[in-house]
Length: 389
Picture 1 (cartoon, one colour):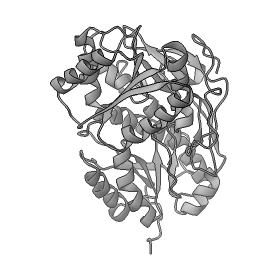
Picture 2 (picture 1 turned 180 degrees about the vertical axis):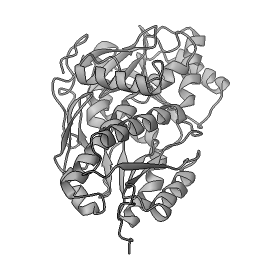
Picture 3 (picture 1 turned 60 degrees about the horizontal axis):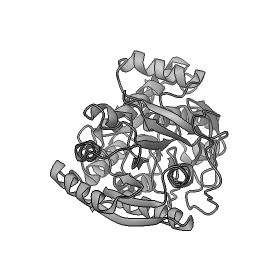
Picture 4 (picture 1 turned 120 degrees about the vertical axis):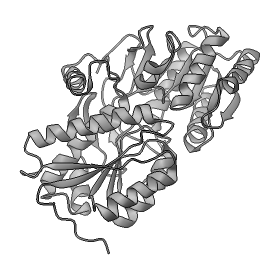
């Protein structure tokens, strides 16, 4: 039986589970920082009925097993009622049995492949109908239907590619090949992929390469002399932290889809960017994962206030169902049935400066459909060069 959780005399402990050594450490750093920023804002506003949140951060290490061990420490040693974190699907799946057995809530702030439900997980990153569908439609309409898939060897690339293959084939497109490389592949490995790209000459490349491998992939593309205007790399996982680490020009002209980009020109987005820059430095990259990490803390805090504290997961889950927040991307809310989040799909093209310039934006929040039951290529973001949110 799970021990009763009561706030320490000085406040409520909340777990942070991110890594500084994993393949995706760069984007996880932005998520950890945004989590801390939101905690500071919650505490400045009075915490949970006068009780502050106390972040307890455990270094997650570089492997799924290391994340699981860190989650065990947070649950059993620190008895946190909630964990904010994990990034790659392999690490989330390693942690889910821990939080489910301890009746601890996991808030997961990262896009993923869908087809999952946990009674103790709140998914605040994009589900496939909120990013795969609009990106596939954009690629088909603007670049063509002959696509090459390139990804890493773990669950997210395989499952995301399965979804994208279905979308392309339903629209009359074709997948020329699927290439999967081991995680942490070399520049030479990616240059060999470029030989295959040259032979197939696809209209576009759909990339599920993640983390530091992204740098080597895009730099290999640049070294091969390909033209993004004719054959872009389109990715859901490439983000501002990745682009900032690439050599100049490597990311230019390629495409990404996410609910939020730092270039979104709305008051809520500008406030978030300004606060983040003031706290962590004006040149610190901010990602869509960081934005989700930020607003999910505020959602948790409001749910805890409504539940009379953070000690009862059932009361927290009841309070979270349908709960909304004015996030930097727009008004978001938790779908009570799926535990996923209504989000605002957007597509961006990366500029020479490394900025992700929004070229299409949803006119309203899109309901999550993690099992892709009611997806369609006809719904989603609107027209190029629009920020119609």
